[in-house]
Amino acid sequence: MNRADAKQQQGRTVLIDLGNEGTFFATLHSIITPPQQVWNGEVTVTGIFTLPVFSKIDTLLDKPGKTMHVSGQKILPVSPDRQQVSFSVTLSEAIEDKKAQITERSRQNSLEMKQYNDILRQLSPKDTALHPPLDDVHYIYYKIEKSKDVIYLTEPKMGDVLELANCPFQLEAADPRQGWVNVTHVKGFRFADEAGDILTLRNHDWVRIHPEQFEPYTILLNELDKTSRQGLKQALMHFSLTDSDLLECHNRLLYELLQSSPETTLKGVNFLSYQRNGLTVMIQHHYVRHIHNKETDYVYDRFECTADNGERKIYVYTNNAYTRNEKSDQ
Image 1 (tube, helix red, strand yellow):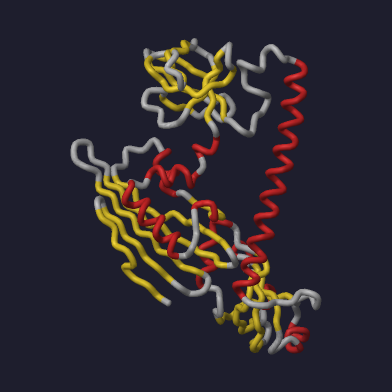
Image 2 (cartoon, helix red, strand yellow; image 1 turned 180 degrees about the horizontal axis):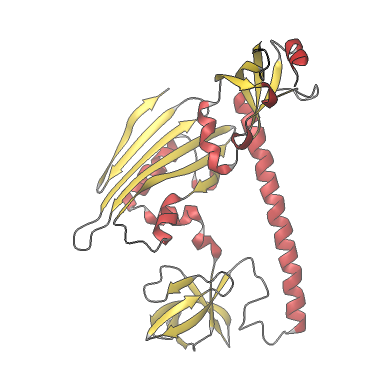
């Protein structure tokens, strides 16, 4: 927007484009026009037009009602047919739009993979029972590989490797009689199905794992001990939320656990967002893990909950106890 147009928009609603932090409705209070310099506008944020990228999602927390100076290059006119209501309403609309986009992408991917798999089954019906489809979006397939008396699971496409011993994931193996069945690793290439029958596989045979087990939120819940999970559950219950209301989960702890690093201390923040019935809640999960070889590991979890209506709750857990409502802001 140029200076002349900006002067006409003083006191009215405009858009401010903050790049990766999103685009917002704002009231333009005044403009500052220093000679031979880019003009600035003083604005107050009143609503959200487009969401930030996920790595910047936490910047939403300080936006409602925030007054700031913004370069004129970032101030845009509002379409007359776009009525801005309130920050919470516009936030809900933006999140619903994002969820619809994600759902549509998932639907298109599933449709394409189904078509590929149908063609594969028609062309090689005898082989697909014991071999992975061309690209099955419902499972991740691993080959069993043995090297120096150690048995690994290897994923050919991405090169991921899991040691089979003490593998924490539920595996499925291909039984020539029953197809894919749930199995538990016994020893070596021997597996037991749910009936207790032993299935012996060979080097380079396939097993598969449902990708839900690799989802950041599922792994995060598994990494929390029982008492800490109870603290998170009570935080969600306070806001009338459940795990199914999760919008997005940024799991920094998962990233650290996957690194082949000798670090004995893990420290960081995970970001969780939930939404239900027009209420959006952001949870910052601050964690510390001190890993010990012989002593009990030190565990610290702090859940800072902020709702878009301004309410805040904090739950703290360390080893065998958590503190409810350490701090609450209305």
